[in-house]
Length: 366
Image (cartoon, rainbow, N blue to C red; front, side, top):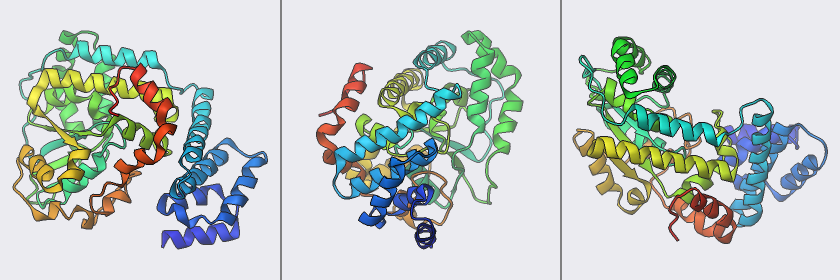
């Protein structure tokens, strides 16, 4: 139905960049050669930056679908550069020094677990799915929410807000502990109040906000029994996927090769720190391992979360629930290797991304 409506909109306005942006996310091959020619002609003339970026993204998806990967990547990069320029113009550009300072701050504030009297152990238990965007957080939640005893919450903002308050209000580990202790009940109540309605029989609720990888220290202080599912994907695949989409959220790191590579390195360092502090309390949900063995990886995930096996988790794509992310289409399909194969198609065109990741200390597999 959405595809039909978008095609009708394009028939009315053959140069409607917004309609092409959404259409090519649903079906990149739906843009015909004539449609592409008209859109290309449109961006040769003066147009608004957001219109130009959406048109370039749509054309890039069509290029990718037709095997023109080098041209596709050039257009993705050009589209995202427009978004980056717009962010800088309003003072919201990516700042490496700010991200580096955040990593150092959390390493300092949470050099060891924070044990609080009265920490929350109430039902339902909580599952936080963290990682880089486009690394499988939506897929992990879709698998879990297919379980009859799990309710999927989607990307909940409140833990990010709490984490930011702790980071702003404490400069030492002792100060962080005091702040968390003083506001413990309020923080717990705020977070719990943002969960979806909990049906009878629910054992666990999930939160798949990927940027909670910054929040693991706070999460484990307030909810010591919470499960941390770390969605992992190869660095190049994850960063390429980020560069291919226009995010709903204002992710400054997502718009340029150097920025996404630097942020990926910061994320790796942060997860390495949490692993050192919390050890096996964090479960690595590896995208490549899931593709290679869906049932074995799903069983490991359910075991870690303390859930009994359910065949429904293998049929996650049949689950009827709203998914408000760029992965909405993917989680409606069975597990497949398409996203992993994308890197092979791009080949040498990805060298600038691979070099940027290596420059910031990220190991890139050949």
